[in-house]
Image (cartoon, rainbow, N blue to C red; front, side):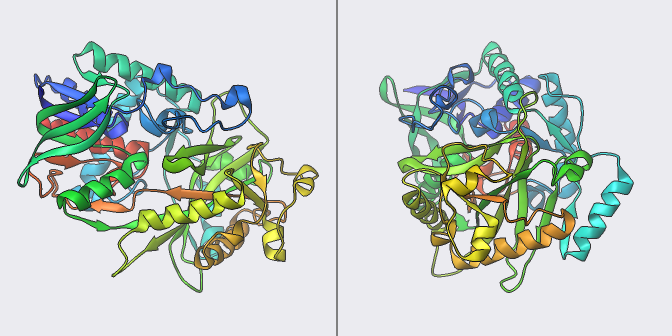
Length: 463
């Protein structure tokens, strides 16, 4: 049996920044971070050697390990409270923005690029916004600090060393299997690792398992009566076009955050995670679920830009399993692609036909995910989501002429697992005493910066 003041489950941004802030506040409390993946320096994706996804066991190195998916993402820090989830609803917009600015300075301390994308160019931004308004879309202004996939790994390695040097204990290759509860009080966690099963007791338990652990946390909430509610689930595609098509937006904004509510369903549809000169990537979740994402490097560039188009689904009674719903959509798409990501040309979708590999080979847009399988994503995508996506792409075409071109590529499935929302007060207390839930798995944040902010605020309260 081990006893700590604070036990943190998950070494993603929320968990990491909880510990960083406690150090900065000169806290003398003992802290342990339990992470089922490996240290960031030991995280290796073999695809760069093999040329294809090898479905690493027991987990995907891109999504699991120190810094979570952040170390292998494009590493964009959104510097506006308007982007990154609903944390401002819990703590207020002003406090959120102040903490974003503070957290951004910490990232700079650890080596983040000082350059900020999407600032200035006011006249060009006005023109883009005007076109968006004409198309029935909203352009969200958001300065971006781009770390870059390879630079993000260096930055998080520096953070990892900082935590260890300041006495934070980190258990790698160790999975939290359950909470230790005494009535409505959390006493700690049960952990399975290299040394078998053990119990870790703590005055405060912080669950910060990211999107990778959203499904696990949802089950935990159900099993232990942790107050929560089904939230939004995002189902969509990753779109890839030639850089020339979206060159102006890339230059002026770097990332165009567009939001719309296309007819006839008027669900919220948005762009997300834009990667100029980037690469489409595959990530593997539990049960070999292959999902698509995008990376963008500081040095290595492609001829294409990719971005996600996500359709938000809100479910009402009696249905309460939005994560499982999204997983089923992903599983069906994987089935059609024989375990691979599916890719289809937009023109073929409009023509009601599948895409063939020979057609991709002679297109202007060459896929940056070489092992994606040409096929028909509409055979697996729900009708409502597909219609929303098609209409949204055609609206974006008014802002970015050529975006809805026949050769534009759509990859599927793009899924975001943060739909379970844990009920908490403004001090992040759940209905279980001593238990706190942070980051994307809590349903309150989306993305690196806002999850990091959530951690900073938790660290202050614990310190």
